[in-house]
Length: 320
Image (cartoon, rainbow, N blue to C red; front, top):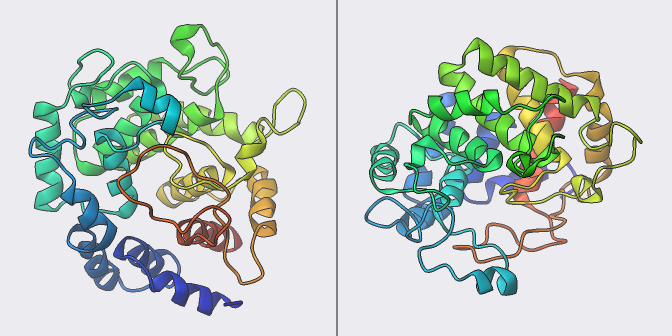
């Protein structure tokens, strides 16, 4: 598996949630073909399995951010749980569940009617107080067709002076963070596809500039890496940041707006190239601890179809 064709065959020999994106992003299959494969996400593989765990009221694990039976001691012993509604929705979005499907529409309605945020009891599609959570809620809501305009307005007003966001703002932070910023940017980009406003577009551009000024991973003052984990590839990212996640965001942004790749992405692109294994794949460097419904990778240190898909489409976009 050393040439791109063999790697693509390996990617296609996988779950529908990966296959349809390979067909669309790497081999330019006609839309009717990849759309037919995408439709299988609801009925086969990981997508169908995740939907099978959904509660009758539309939630997962009985809660919005943590399971209904959540025990704080479990977080300390096993890590943060990833089985509640917000993380399950985000994973279905990554899988590519068709938002036009009856199942997706019903899910949006049920969550709007029944789910409340653990933090303050707010209705789910009105968001809560943390920028990271609200950014992902905007991304999921915009993707699945919920009205998240009130959250967008709040996020636009919460942008910090340096251009980005920080979920520690309410605790006094005045400097943006890479992780909070990418979570909000992904939300604003999904929102822009369906209902962007001049204010949200301006906020998104300033958040992009925050990352670009830092070459996606460096401290602005010293030029040193802000966090060595930013250069290690993670999946699923959940709320965490790495340069591959950021590059995939900029690819998506450029496709939406028609913009050329910014030269300041070049260093991060070079890092992605350098991490390619001899067999043409990319490894999963690490994953987050904590309970999940099921695994979608083969383990840390092993070639990852998800990381490889993301890396290949980023490089294809950059090189074209």
